Length: 235
Image 1 (cartoon, rainbow, N blue to C red):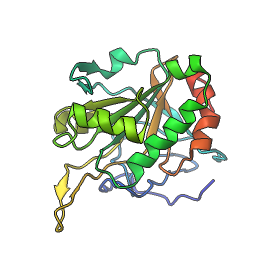
Image 2 (image 1 turned 45 degrees about the vertical axis):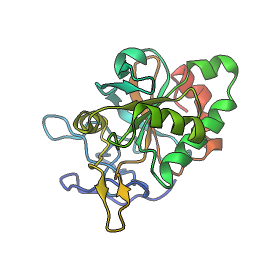
Image 3 (image 1 turned 90 degrees about the vertical axis):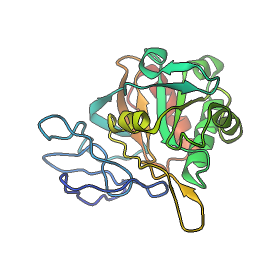
């Protein structure tokens, strides 16, 4: 397990498109996955963290959340231009959720590629069950057609790409503790979308997000965990 610095839950941090967000573990309280490099802190109404990671050592890539996240209430547009209700369409299905953008130079295509490689190693019946959902953080450029084309090249034709208006996407991401900023143009003209770069796995049994993966998770590590995730078990 990598060592993780402690974090002050009252502070804010900007999302990051390329740096991995450290996990916070403590004897009394463990903040779910926060903030220093990729996440806005999600909190309950009383200010306590909305989810927590187990304080136990993490020998594997997966971090099991002791307080899972509810699947975000998101109704967006898929790559066919049709309405897609995330909760309704993925209910009772093993689902991996990732927020990113097609012009991302590093983390996003690598994550999609790793998931695609891992999915191909599953038996056909399990491949058909798995839902991989990519929600753009750059909806102005990521049209349904652009998302579909990119996912076929960077990931897998079965992957679900979703776009919509930015405020809706940002609000949905915050429901699972993921911070994203509006895309902005840098001095050289490059448009950058800053976002938390973790993959959240939802159980087909509870529809709760109960397992988290950092952006350095390999395709071998995903392949090792997917059989358990598809059954709703802890990897």
